[in-house]
Length: 435
Image 1 (cartoon, rainbow, N blue to C red):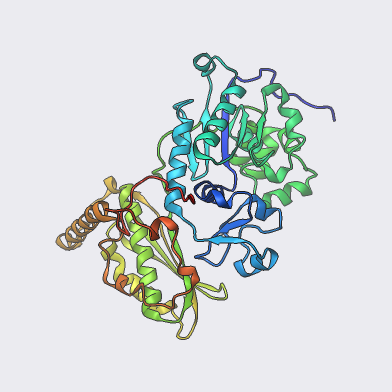
Image 2 (tube, rainbow, N blue to C red):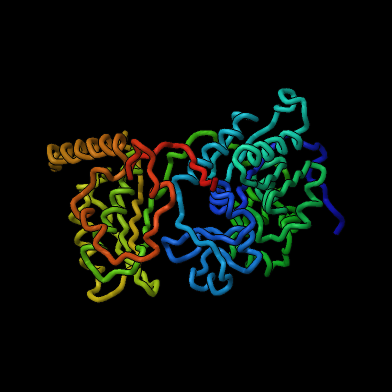
């Protein structure tokens, strides 16, 4: 089959996908210059690698590997607890740099984002490729981290291109070169095509992204449905997914999961961890003016066996206290005496807007209003003094567990500046330089 061109114009649209290179470890190496060029990982608090530097990846150490296995592979491996506060600060500055080049920026995750550069050539008197390179270089120069850039006509193509050459990669795919690029890309790399779909498509003889793009729209829809047709359009340079600049507020579910620093058989401690996850989940849905009609609770043992229960609430709510009797009941049914637990999980589902609330005939409105007011007070106090500064009683037992080296805190939490507290710190990255 000869190559089929999908587009003759170079850039009717210019979409950038930016992807941080081993973002967590890159940030750690930025604030700890002594660690540059050395194999390191984050995730000490979990006992499982959350992110591995490229120096560690070269030794076969990857995300999800247990720390004791990684240390056997590299005796000099640097292992640190994840410092999500600092990673978030770097993320914010990274997206701020992107917005210097265009106001159309979408934050898709802490280390990934899209930018629409269409029409910005007149502003910068440069090609789209040059503008994207300037963005990449500014991030490296100002934050001392590297990112990979993909530039093309759609979000799907740009995301595919950003993964092509990592780390510090740059791949630009103009419209008249789409067909050539797609021939180099495995079907499994396409955004929106998961492992099961990949295996199904391989059984139909599809191996590359190009093989999928040349199929008819009807065939793509028959195989995968609506998303199949959308992916086909995106791969052919026909934009379906716009760059969304608005902050995400339409969550289908909100989940919170916390791994213990050491497995525990103490029911009071395990319950305290579960309650903390419940509080965190409800804080988040209140921030976005949402209420939940479904609650899922799960406990996971040291051997990764997970047991959970799901309950549909009699009324949608955003008040933590309203579900606590149910949480206690679910915990008592799940907890097994003597089992060693390593994590708890809470999922809030069937979310709806606070504005859609309707009073029910036999509800105790006075009690409900009091719980909502208590939640508002908790949020105001925590906003001023730090998250979980005001919390439910079981939280008092969170320190009742065996301490291990996994309890080590990130440097910014151990070395507080004057005026900082464990709950409130300056929103600026802190460099750790020997002098």
